[in-house]
Every structure is written in C-alpha cells, then in structure tokens.
Image (cartoon, each protein chain N blue to C red):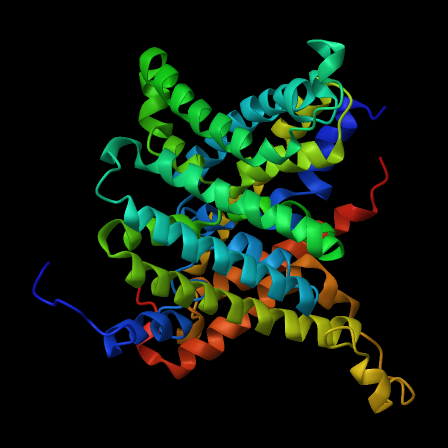
Amino acid sequence: MEHIFNIFIKSIFINNMVFAYFLGMCSYLAVSKTVKTSTGLGIAVIFVLGITVPLNYTLNKYLLEPGALSWISKDFADVDLSYLSFIIFIATIASMTQLVEMIVERFAPALYAQLGIFLPLIAVNCAILGGSLFMQQRDYDTVWQATSFGIGSGVGWFLAIVALAAIREKIRYSNVPAPLRGLGITFIITGLMGIAFMSFMGIKL
Amino acid sequence: MSKKEREPLFSLKNLRLISGPINKGNPVTVLVLGICSALAVTVKLKPALVMGISVMVVLAFSNVVISMMRNLIPNRIRIIVQLVVISFMVIVVDQILRAYLFDVSKQLSVFVGLIITNCIIMGRLEAFALGNKPWQSFLDGIGNAAGYSLILVIVAFFRELLGSGTIWGYPVLEKLGLYKIGYENNGLMILPPMALITLGVIIWIQRSKNKDLIETK
C-alpha cells in the first residue's frame, strides 16, 4: 500500500495535471492573465477536486465496479456497471459544484465574492473529470489515498496556473514577435515550464 | 424563418460552415478550445487520428440532437442537458473503441472520457447548435472537428517522425538509412512539453500567414 503522503507529493510534482497530462488547459490558458484571478480559480479547483474525487471513489467502489454491488446481495455479484461511470462522474461533479457554490454563498459571502464566478466554470474543467477518471484507473485502496490524490492534483494545478500568471504579467513588458503574441508565447512558456517540472521525475518515492 | 423555403443541402453558406473552422476559425489555434486532449494523444499518428474521428462523431451528433431539442430545453438547466447528451455519445464511442480498436483505446486511456469536458463540444453546442437548424449544426460539428483533427494530425506527424522515426508505425528514417550515418531520435519530442512547443510553433506559422489573427494588446 502506497503511503498517503507519497501520493500527495507525486500528484503535485511528478504527475502534475497540467504538465504531464495537459488537463484543465482551457481555463489554464484563458484565466491566467493576472495572478489574482488565477489564485481564485486555483483555490476553487483544489476545493472541488478534494470533494469530488473521494465522492466518486466511493460511488465507483460501491456502485460501478465489476462486483461492486455484492454488498446488497450475492445475486448482484457479477453485475458490471462500469460503462456508466462517465455519466455518473459528470453528474456528481456538476451537482457538487452547484452545491458548493450555494453553500459558499450562504455561509462565506467574502469567499463567494472571490470564488463565485469560477465555480460554475469548474464543472466543465477537464482537470476535475480527469482527476476522477485517473482515480478510477489507478485503483486506489482506501478513500484516504483517493482524497490525497485529489487534493494533491489540485495543488499541482494551482501552482502551475499561478506560476504561469506571474510569468505572463512580466512578459507584457517584453518585445515578443507579433505573430507569437498572446496564445503562441503562452504555449511555449508552458512547454518550457513543463521541461523544468520534468526534473522531478527522477525522484523515487 | 419561412423566407427560404428550401435551401440546397450544400449551398455556399453551408460549405463555408465546414471550411471556416479548418483555417481562420480553427477551434484549437484561434479560439483556444479543446487543448487538453489535443496535446495528450499526439505522440503517434494513429491515436491522434482515432481521437479526431471520435470527436467528430460526438460533436456532429450531439450538435444535431441539441439542435433538434433547442426549443424544448429550459434555459436554466441547459448545461446539464448538454452534458447528458454528450456523455451518452461518448459512452457509445468508448464502447465501440473498446470492442473494435482495443489497443488504441488503451493508449487513449482517460482521454476518450475527457471528450465530455472538451470545451470544443460545449462551446459549439452553446454557440451554434442552440440557435440553428439540425443540418447546419451537423455541418458545423463536422467542420469544427475537422479543424481540430487537422491540428492533432500535424502535431502527431512531427512528434512521431522526430521522436520515434516512424510514420504510422512505418520506420521511415531507418529505411532512408539515417541511423547509419549517426542520426539519433530526439527523445524529447515524445515527452509532453514538446507537444506544447510544437503547437506554439504551428500558431506562430499560421498567424504570420494570416496577419489579421495577430492579437493586439
């Protein structure tokens, strides 16, 4: 059994959502213009990943996996509902973001003012669904491992978007060739950041 | 609505729906949609092409379905309805891939499922299918997915050629005898970051050809 802390560190640096799997690229490129907004989105992603991954883990374990329904009775032991996983996962994510948005609005108006606009965006962020699908593929043993994977991936995504936003704020003052301006240079920066992050791959945990 | 009674199926306006997204309105390089999966599946040509075709099927048919239901869907819950339609299409595609192309399906791993949250699909449903007739939406879906596939294939072509020295699994560079004179494969091209840089260069080339795409600050 892999230690929880190892999974956490691994999902932040080695299997970083952005640099190793390109997940959540769309909002990563669109919202990374200033450090302030990207911090808001990053925190929201950590939050939602930390909730949806363990929830989907439980659903997968007791509802979707082959033989998962055997806790009801022996007759269901060979039922395999795993083809439903996409629709169940996306439904969980969409409803959880809605729920989190309502709870935050009711109990923490100050936080809502910062995060509010980003929460609905997150339902269609590939990093969230990707987190659940990777969790299903890697087959973690306990719900705690899945939780630490979820939060770790969120932190990795947060680091990536804040770092990119900081670089983009600085690059505004440099003379980029006209056709590369905006999107093109952002891709190349992300690529170079990815190469830097690859140096973590050598770490054995 | 009843002004144009019967428009020919392939009128000039309809053909433009297909050709537009391939170059000037390209979903990947101009509108920045669907980048996530565009990069991860481009190590080899074959998975890239399979991914492109899968996206085309999902996008075209969910465009048609949403366009047929566009007057029935309540505005407030349209996102959920769209997600359900898309996930249904993706499940069908995923099951077909698993049945007939198992090895490619293994390589694509979670990225088939991630077509659901591919922003191209959501974006086209929101921007086009909700306001247009089924046939036009179908063409729009085909066009946008073709633009997406084109970028995927270009990136995959260079990464496979420079990274593994093959095209579609055929060892081109070996047959040319390049290895004998000391050429080595560039292992960096197989790694994820080079996909981003390849795409950055494609955008650079496209924008220096089409000056009006250049972003002004």
